[in-house]
Amino acid sequence: MLGKFIVFEGLDGSGISTQSGLLYDYFSKKGKKTVLTKEQTNGLIGGLIKAGLRHEWKTTPLALQLLFAADRSHHLDKQINPAINNGKIVICDRYILSTLAFGSLDVDMQFLKEINSKFPAPDITFILDVLPKICLQRITKSRFHAELFEEEEKLNKIRKAYLSLKNYFPNTFLIDGNRSIEEVHKDIIKIVEKQTK
Image 1 (cartoon, rainbow, N blue to C red):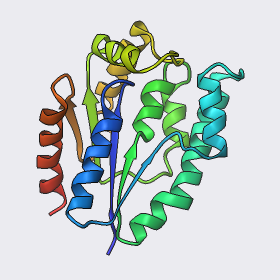
Image 2 (cartoon, rainbow, N blue to C red; image 1 turned 45 degrees about the horizontal axis):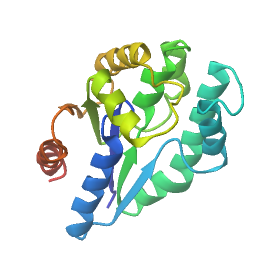
Image 3 (cartoon, rainbow, N blue to C red; image 1 turned 60 degrees about the vertical axis):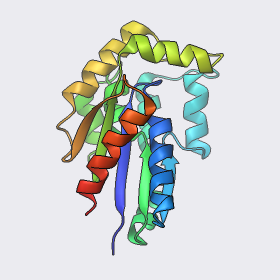
Protein backbone atom coordinates (compact mmCIF):
# COMPACT_ATOMS: atom_id res chain seq x y z
CA MET A 1 0.00 0.00 0.00
CA LEU A 2 1.31 3.43 -0.94
CA GLY A 3 1.91 6.01 1.77
CA LYS A 4 0.95 9.67 1.75
CA PHE A 5 2.90 12.80 0.84
CA ILE A 6 1.99 15.87 2.94
CA VAL A 7 3.65 19.23 2.37
CA PHE A 8 3.80 22.44 4.41
CA GLU A 9 4.37 25.76 2.63
CA GLY A 10 4.59 29.37 3.76
CA LEU A 11 6.80 32.33 4.52
CA ASP A 12 9.80 31.99 6.83
CA GLY A 13 8.41 32.53 10.32
CA SER A 14 4.94 31.21 9.36
CA GLY A 15 5.31 28.13 11.56
CA ILE A 16 5.78 25.42 8.93
CA SER A 17 8.62 23.68 10.79
CA THR A 18 6.64 23.75 14.05
CA GLN A 19 3.46 22.41 12.42
CA SER A 20 5.22 19.73 10.36
CA GLY A 21 6.92 18.55 13.58
CA LEU A 22 3.59 18.45 15.45
CA LEU A 23 1.96 16.47 12.64
CA TYR A 24 4.89 14.03 12.68
CA ASP A 25 4.35 13.54 16.45
CA TYR A 26 0.62 13.06 15.89
CA PHE A 27 1.15 10.25 13.36
CA SER A 28 3.95 8.66 15.39
CA LYS A 29 1.70 8.44 18.46
CA LYS A 30 -0.87 6.66 16.30
CA GLY A 31 1.78 4.10 15.36
CA LYS A 32 2.03 5.25 11.72
CA LYS A 33 5.39 4.94 10.03
CA THR A 34 6.23 8.58 9.27
CA VAL A 35 9.18 10.44 7.77
CA LEU A 36 9.80 14.14 8.47
CA THR A 37 11.97 15.85 5.90
CA LYS A 38 12.57 19.31 4.44
CA GLU A 39 13.79 21.32 1.46
CA GLN A 40 16.34 22.50 0.86
CA THR A 41 17.90 19.26 2.10
CA ASN A 42 20.98 18.81 4.25
CA GLY A 43 22.77 17.10 1.37
CA LEU A 44 25.53 18.43 -0.88
CA ILE A 45 23.25 20.44 -3.19
CA GLY A 46 21.17 21.72 -0.27
CA GLY A 47 24.35 22.93 1.40
CA LEU A 48 25.26 24.96 -1.69
CA ILE A 49 21.80 26.55 -1.69
CA LYS A 50 21.97 27.43 2.03
CA ALA A 51 25.38 29.06 1.58
CA GLY A 52 24.01 31.09 -1.38
CA LEU A 53 21.03 32.29 0.69
CA ARG A 54 23.42 33.39 3.44
CA HIS A 55 25.54 35.36 0.90
CA GLU A 56 28.54 33.07 1.47
CA TRP A 57 28.96 32.73 -2.30
CA LYS A 58 27.39 34.51 -5.25
CA THR A 59 25.49 33.10 -8.17
CA THR A 60 22.60 34.14 -10.41
CA PRO A 61 18.94 33.75 -9.32
CA LEU A 62 18.47 31.30 -12.21
CA ALA A 63 21.42 29.12 -11.12
CA LEU A 64 20.02 29.08 -7.58
CA GLN A 65 16.60 27.90 -8.82
CA LEU A 66 18.21 25.17 -10.92
CA LEU A 67 20.01 24.01 -7.79
CA PHE A 68 16.67 23.88 -5.94
CA ALA A 69 15.25 21.68 -8.73
CA ALA A 70 18.33 19.41 -8.63
CA ASP A 71 18.09 19.13 -4.85
CA ARG A 72 14.39 18.22 -5.14
CA SER A 73 15.04 15.58 -7.79
CA HIS A 74 17.68 13.92 -5.60
CA HIS A 75 15.45 14.22 -2.51
CA LEU A 76 12.52 12.52 -4.27
CA ASP A 77 14.70 9.75 -5.67
CA LYS A 78 16.62 8.93 -2.48
CA GLN A 79 14.16 9.66 0.31
CA ILE A 80 10.58 10.69 -0.49
CA ASN A 81 9.54 8.17 -3.18
CA PRO A 82 11.12 5.11 -1.48
CA ALA A 83 9.33 5.98 1.79
CA ILE A 84 5.94 6.47 0.05
CA ASN A 85 6.42 3.19 -1.87
CA ASN A 86 7.01 1.47 1.48
CA GLY A 87 3.66 2.73 2.80
CA LYS A 88 5.08 5.51 4.98
CA ILE A 89 3.64 8.98 5.47
CA VAL A 90 6.13 11.62 4.32
CA ILE A 91 5.80 15.13 5.77
CA CYS A 92 7.90 17.70 3.92
CA ASP A 93 8.72 21.19 5.19
CA ARG A 94 8.62 23.12 1.84
CA TYR A 95 8.29 21.80 -1.69
CA ILE A 96 7.36 23.11 -5.16
CA LEU A 97 5.13 26.02 -4.08
CA SER A 98 8.06 27.50 -2.14
CA THR A 99 10.14 27.46 -5.31
CA LEU A 100 7.36 29.16 -7.27
CA ALA A 101 6.55 31.77 -4.61
CA PHE A 102 10.10 32.69 -3.57
CA GLY A 103 11.80 32.03 -6.90
CA SER A 104 9.38 34.15 -8.92
CA LEU A 105 10.78 37.31 -7.33
CA ASP A 106 13.75 37.04 -9.71
CA VAL A 107 12.97 34.25 -12.20
CA ASP A 108 10.00 33.86 -14.57
CA MET A 109 7.30 31.81 -12.81
CA GLN A 110 6.36 29.91 -15.97
CA PHE A 111 9.97 28.71 -16.31
CA LEU A 112 9.95 27.60 -12.67
CA LYS A 113 6.71 25.68 -13.26
CA GLU A 114 8.28 23.96 -16.27
CA ILE A 115 11.46 22.82 -14.50
CA ASN A 116 9.35 21.40 -11.66
CA SER A 117 6.59 19.93 -13.84
CA LYS A 118 7.85 16.32 -13.72
CA PHE A 119 7.85 16.15 -9.92
CA PRO A 120 4.84 14.49 -8.21
CA ALA A 121 2.02 16.51 -6.66
CA PRO A 122 1.58 16.09 -2.90
CA ASP A 123 -1.50 14.29 -1.55
CA ILE A 124 -2.13 17.25 0.79
CA THR A 125 -0.58 20.74 0.77
CA PHE A 126 -0.96 23.18 3.64
CA ILE A 127 -0.16 26.85 3.02
CA LEU A 128 0.25 28.60 6.37
CA ASP A 129 -0.78 32.17 5.65
CA VAL A 130 0.79 34.65 8.09
CA LEU A 131 1.17 38.42 7.75
CA PRO A 132 4.78 39.36 6.84
CA LYS A 133 5.00 41.73 9.86
CA ILE A 134 4.26 38.83 12.21
CA CYS A 135 6.72 36.55 10.37
CA LEU A 136 9.51 39.11 10.77
CA GLN A 137 8.74 39.54 14.49
CA ARG A 138 9.00 35.76 14.95
CA ILE A 139 12.22 35.52 12.91
CA THR A 140 14.04 38.28 14.78
CA LYS A 141 13.27 36.52 18.10
CA SER A 142 14.83 33.26 16.99
CA ARG A 143 17.70 34.15 14.63
CA PHE A 144 20.82 36.28 14.51
CA HIS A 145 21.20 36.53 10.73
CA ALA A 146 18.61 37.50 8.12
CA GLU A 147 18.39 35.39 4.98
CA LEU A 148 18.03 36.70 1.47
CA PHE A 149 14.23 36.78 1.36
CA GLU A 150 13.51 38.13 4.83
CA GLU A 151 12.51 41.72 4.09
CA GLU A 152 8.93 42.88 4.49
CA GLU A 153 8.41 44.21 0.95
CA LYS A 154 9.74 40.95 -0.51
CA LEU A 155 7.67 38.89 1.92
CA ASN A 156 4.51 40.73 0.82
CA LYS A 157 5.22 39.79 -2.81
CA ILE A 158 5.96 36.18 -1.85
CA ARG A 159 2.74 35.99 0.18
CA LYS A 160 0.76 37.24 -2.85
CA ALA A 161 2.44 34.57 -4.98
CA TYR A 162 1.49 31.85 -2.48
CA LEU A 163 -2.13 33.04 -2.46
CA SER A 164 -2.20 32.99 -6.27
CA LEU A 165 -0.98 29.35 -6.17
CA LYS A 166 -3.59 28.02 -3.75
CA ASN A 167 -5.25 25.99 -6.53
CA TYR A 168 -2.00 24.85 -8.19
CA PHE A 169 -2.24 21.38 -6.64
CA PRO A 170 -5.44 19.52 -5.71
CA ASN A 171 -6.09 19.21 -1.95
CA THR A 172 -4.36 22.47 -1.04
CA PHE A 173 -5.59 24.09 2.16
CA LEU A 174 -4.98 27.70 3.15
CA ILE A 175 -4.59 27.88 6.93
CA ASP A 176 -4.69 31.08 8.98
CA GLY A 177 -1.30 30.88 10.71
CA ASN A 178 -1.66 34.17 12.62
CA ARG A 179 -3.30 32.24 15.49
CA SER A 180 -1.80 30.15 18.30
CA ILE A 181 0.22 27.02 17.53
CA GLU A 182 -2.51 24.87 19.12
CA GLU A 183 -5.35 26.39 17.06
CA VAL A 184 -3.44 25.95 13.81
CA HIS A 185 -2.53 22.34 14.71
CA LYS A 186 -6.19 21.50 15.48
CA ASP A 187 -7.28 22.75 12.03
CA ILE A 188 -4.54 20.71 10.35
CA ILE A 189 -5.51 17.51 12.21
CA LYS A 190 -9.19 17.93 11.22
CA ILE A 191 -8.21 18.16 7.54
CA VAL A 192 -5.69 15.32 7.72
CA GLU A 193 -8.22 13.00 9.37
CA LYS A 194 -10.75 13.67 6.59
CA GLN A 195 -8.19 13.33 3.80
CA THR A 196 -6.45 10.16 5.05
CA LYS A 197 -9.55 8.02 5.85
